Length: 185
Image (cartoon, rainbow, N blue to C red; front, side, top):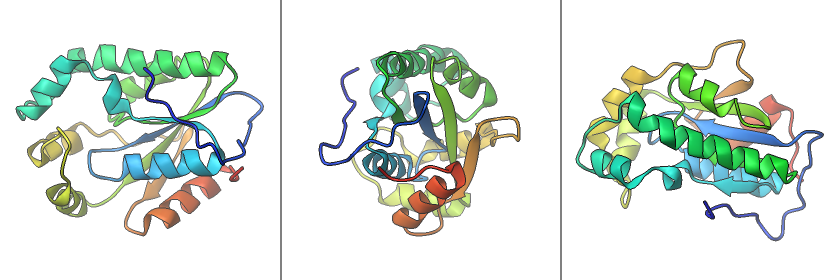
């Protein structure tokens, strides 16, 4: 995938080992907004996981059909492989990915980077209201319930943080960076 971007004016924050921040959660929690801001502040490359979906997955979601685990396998592998490619080049990244189930996150953790999760959470009513105002995305609000039904929040043994998104986006990013112990470049 060539969707990755690196802000030209940002001085990268370079960790000892390449790191991938996976900004996760159901549709509508602000993954893209948060991930883009994290990448900007850290000077790391950014990728939107939706760009890794095969067309068949996009077609299903557009029709309002929830994806099954078999649909997600190639998508997760593509994201994992992109993270590994960037890590092998010495680059840290920020990527969005719903990563709703632990076994999905286990696939991403197979990348050759330190994979850390930023789990964005909110009340389903707030997320539903956000989705109702969103335009230009193939994920219809009707699939939100299936995402919350599949959601398995991070557990203590997973490398990541949980951040509430009931505040302004800049404050969400500030909270994530503080919890992760990362500082803008």
